Length: 209
Ligand code: PRP
Ligand code: URA
Image (cartoon, rainbow, N blue to C red; front, side):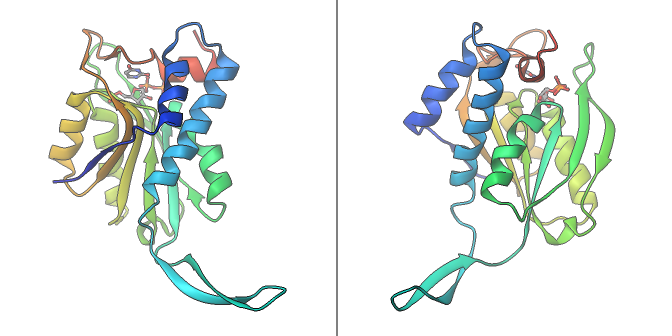
């Protein structure tokens, strides 16, 4: 079974409190989604392999550690996942970016795929899928399935807020995928929105409501 990491760092929790507030405007919401993504990325990459190198400082030779192992790819689930990409790429500029477009059918809440474009060497990369919300888990589970079809073996999921239903769905369908979240909320409402959640992440990032 995969691991679920709930990141309860005070900085993350403080920023999340601002996201949850319905009075937070689009500009601040978008900025804070990015800041949270960077903090989550810092934790989710904690176990990346490193190897020793030597560099000459102006004073002497230093033994240093640099990233080794697989290259990385960041895959946002459109639209809302886009809000998490830029700050992660600032931290890991060599990562490539794939995109998966999914929206939830308003009646069935089932994900509908409308776009997919991956880097050509995605199968050799360690993939981080990013999306602020893990509600029913349908979008994340489908996104992971699509990425596995390219041959990817190493996939991590990063969500800001998850519902227990979404975690269960991903763990059942993809027990090899670890999940990083900043909060697990109690439940979903009748429209499959996370309660208390933060509302519609895509609409709040892009100002579409
Ligand atoms: C939201 C969110 C996730 C999905 C989560 O996207 O960003 O992708 O819903 O719900 P699920 O776990 O029940 O699948 P939405 O479908 O609203 O599309 P958008 O990002 O384009 O607004
Ligand atoms: N998508 C969102 O943006 N918010 C939710 O609460 C659930 C799905």
